Each structure stands twice: as C-alpha cells, then as structure tokens.
Image (cartoon, rainbow, N blue to C red; front, top):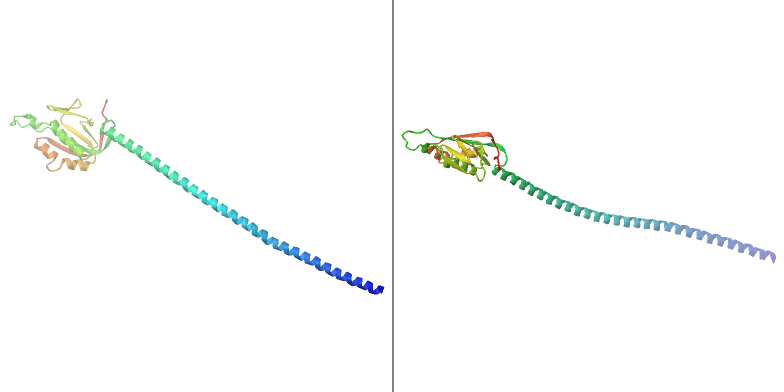
Length: 233
C-alpha cells in the first residue's frame, strides 16, 4: 500500500514538473513575442514622429520661401522707386545744364559751324552805301536759321548770345547786349555741322538772300567750336 502511494506521488510530481515547465516555457515565449511585437511598434512610432517633423519642416520652409519672395518683391519695388527718383534727379540736372547753356552761363564746346558775314564791295554808282553793309536783320536771319537747325549755343565775334540778347545796327558796326562788334561778323554755332550747313546753303534760303543783299557769306564746318560763358549777371 505504501508503494502505491509513493508511486502516485512520483507520478504527480512528474506531472507537476512537466506542467510547470510548460507554463514557464509558454510565459517566456509570450514575453519574447511581446518584446518582438513592441520593437516594430516603437520603430513605427519613431518613423511617424520623423515624418511629422519632416512635414512641419517643409511647411516652415514654404512659409520662409513665401516670406523671402515677399521681401524680394519689396526690394524690387524700392529699387524701382530709387531708380525712378534717380532718373528724375538726372533729368533735372540735365535740364538745368541745358538751361545754363541756353542762358550762356557755362563754357561749351563741340562740333559746329562758323558763318562769316562781311560787307560787300561798294559800287560807287550806287547812291546808298547801306546797301552793301551787314545789318542786324542779316545777322538775325543766320542766327534764327542756326537755332532752327539745332544749334545749342551761338556767339558773334566770340561774344556769347543768351535767350534775351539784343542786337542793334549802328552803321558799320552792330551792338550786342551793349557791346559793339565790327564787321566781319563771325557767327559760331555748336550743333550738327552737316545739318546747319545744309540749312544755310538751302537753295533760296538764307545764304541766297544775303548774297542778293550784296553780303559776302562764308560757311565753314568745324570739328571743335569753343564758346565762352557770358561774363557778369
């Protein structure tokens, strides 16, 4: 009877041992599987976090690019304004220089022409000697034609003319702004020499009219004409 009881104890012990081993093995396997399952979950979460960070960074980059584009547009607009203002100042300075030149306030030089008007040879058979000398109307014809053909500055015998100059004939001399100038009268003009020369030489034009009035006319193209400024006010 005692042997049977011990045998049962042994069998029970073996069963318990096997059962315990199985339980322990199952637990360890479950833990291992859980750990293996957790690894992909963590990696997935990390990948998701990195993706979200990348999306946020791309959004930030877009905002910065838009902001940069706006700033660049503002800079372009400012540059346009400055360029426009600079052009206005340049135009004003250029116009001022032109006005000073027209007023005879600055020395100028450049290509141009010289038109010389001299008294004609007096014919004793003529009663009036005035028909052979240069008068102010002859000078005015040349000056007006030169201005019309583009002259930017004119002088007579080196005396610069301004926009309000006056010329008066006093016998064999003319008075320019109060200063007497004797014949021959050398009219110097700065401008396109070809255009001005052609204008004076035009058939039936100024030269022909002066020659008909017994005036000796000589026209020369010049590479360098220098006109001094008007002295005083």
